Image: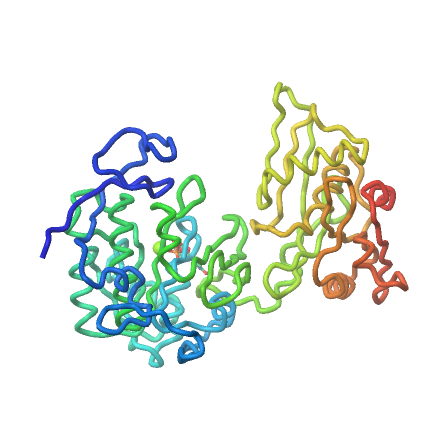
Length: 459
Ligand code: TYD
Ligand code: MG
């Protein structure tokens, strides 16, 4: 058998180079190359690369009409934690590899240990810890009131030794906490380096596909917000879940960023407690901040990330800038979108903010990616700029187009019902989302078609 060779891969773009150099010639990034192993080519390389998916006979893939392909529904197991099952797309899939990312201390280890406890006797499992000792894991399990009987742990970081042990005991679920601590003997690079993370994850993925074991990889998040290791890690796994939340808040949100077995942007909501994470099956209004009265710079919107409507507060602070290039900072929202919205506000609302610093934040540490946040963001910015609160008990949502039109968003009726249910009395929404009679329950609904109308409706 040919010997494994090493090559150098760019952490930003994934390009391969034969020798180390300071700059990646593909993407121009500096200092991003690191060593990794190239497996020698084998006869069935094609199938092996695909993780053995293809309809290969004798290692040769054939072109097959899809009508001849036997479709077997993937076998799923409910973990017993409803919010986690929801984000996974309806339970845990056999042989799937799930990457769970999040800031240190956010609760990743707690969540996964609780999951193994719930799975208990249903599915055998091993929790591999590279960060904590066995005693610490056992103490945590005890504190969380988990049944210790079905829980098995392994304190090891060498991937070859981990796989040896796992192959002997054949658990159905494997948790690796964390992938950044795992290393392979094939590389000389330090554990935690891009090449070690990538190579170890590749071995684990191959193992999962070959044996049908479900593998969870815990990954820490870097300063830039990505999971440490190249983007390649996200491509290698079946699902990427992010665990998010503000350190000051006791609520945590689990979000599917990628999922081959379910919908993305599905949210699972948890509350932290002494006894670990508790599910919040009905999270609709927990992200509203508890103001005593209306405050300038605040707008409440109904977002529908995933399959549930959620009331969230968007806050804006607009302040005279001392910089030549004023700051635009968006937390929980897309930065470029904010710049675009400010341009629309100037052109079609007649309100200039070019000499102002603009900060926008979604309360509760959650992230809103849908365009329905456009109108709330603009109204919050305007409210802060004018130092005048929006009318009391008002909600709003809607996409804003470049020509100042307010475009409808999906599931308008459901969003309005949710707001009315929580006692809101006025809604400023796209005209196409407003019911003809102008009311939902006790709530007055004002349909607007242009930005100027929306601004007028806030008076
Ligand atoms: P931990 O699960 O270790 O976070 P991570 O694995 O993401 O780094 O949790 C961090 C700390 O918070 C830990 O000391 C336990 C504590 N904690 C609770 O007390 N209750 C909870 O519900 C959670 C999630 C964590
Ligand atoms: Mg941890």
